[in-house]
Length: 351
Image (cartoon, rainbow, N blue to C red; front, side, top):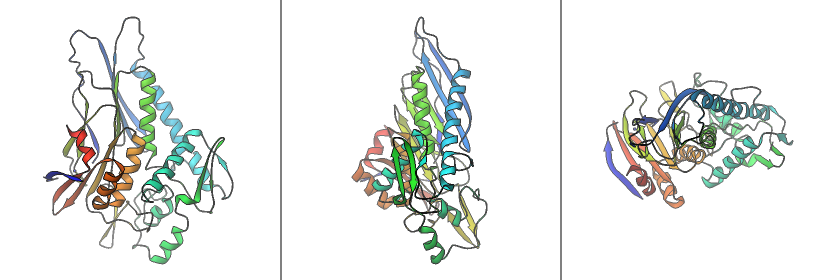
């Protein structure tokens, strides 16, 4: 394990860096960019085509329509805010029965269970009841803090409904089942990453030469920029005020996702409660100004692991990353300064 050997003053959402001007003289390029809203946040896309004789390229409006249709379908499958989505209907369905879902939803839940096991329970998509208990989640919108932290009796009662061990997934025909009434699924720790992966696949199918897709801070790239260089992504300081880029990574056919405790928290009776909750204990982790950024080949994986590693914390998380060959950057605010630590593999993305 190796530190990144820097102490920085201020650390993590992906920001867009670099220009789109083609520098390859003698070649013809067609660049595009567009943005929109999805999954309760925003998305941004930049890309380019290398033109060739006789090839008809789709225009920007057509590409955006295709992306919006894809993201709309995913919202209808995996949103916990839409009452008629597949997940919302499953969450309201009785236990002990198979509930039919789309292949996409079944796939993401299967991945969630895989990462639950891989991280020893640090990632758990059945955490919804705990989030509401602490004043977060779908029904509260993060704006209704509890009068004080829940006592152990209330935590024990809710923990009965938390745990991926309560879930079963069937691939053919795709369906989900829970074994206890009250078990719910919330895919917010994977769905954005999966959506990014799917948008990149869609645009690749349309023939883009290079593209960068970002949804709510989760990023994946394909190819390179028109000038032949890697896509450059900034990581910002983990503080609730101000936005300062403190690290820049370079991505080629790679993904990046960040999870932090500095944007979504509650204050009640002089105490601060983070929305980052350890699903194994039910306890809200203290808000300290921390973020974890993970780089890899899949945005779904990066999204899932960034959440799990934030739960683990830097000390245990760095050991886990080295054992599992994961590229991660941990930023922690201490005494007004941000301490930066990273796994050895993360250094590959900074060169």
